[in-house]
Length: 297
Image (cartoon, rainbow, N blue to C red; front, side):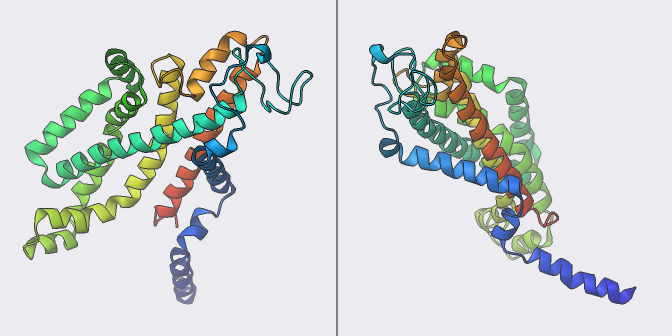
């Protein structure tokens, strides 16, 4: 029995020492999610070279052209055209850039605010913790979509406004997780040793607290990108997102809803773009969470 236990210890240790990439891409869902994320990233980065047409170029004579594989379709418009004759494939490619910009920028803003406040609240505690916690509770009382609609409705729709609104409404997702981990870390021996040796608060937070919660922040940021894409699409669907001359999957979905009976491709393809992008990000986020969790490894 003892020999079996001793033999299991090296095997468990070897599993924990597996390369991060090997653990991350050990499951098919994670691989599929990473592939979708890579495809969307390529479309967003190289949109001017991948899109065959100007996304805003109108051609009323070619309006409602079906996809290329249907009768009446054309290879020049792979996914067909909309009610103004604009190429749907080109608009979806450029919409990937909008989704990427909004997702990454809003997560950076919300993450910076939430992580900063969460670390301060968890490490210092007391009145500071109570004030930040109450502000977060008030924020949680308002649905993110309704709050975003209210802000954009007052300020006016623009790409900058959408990014700032989604970022500001997303900081509370980070505060609670980061605060809880900071509360635990401040009682750990290595943090107490740093305090005893006279290290400054800034050094303790930057060298001992933040590096130990980086994995949780990374996972939260990954799921935050999916949340931002959905919120941007919802705002654009309601004509409160990006301007009309900027291709957006949500706006395309709104334009196509009235033609579902006669030109179903107007709403189907942008809807699929949203669905698969969010699905890919979530699948990759699940795999990233498991790979960064030492217990799962």
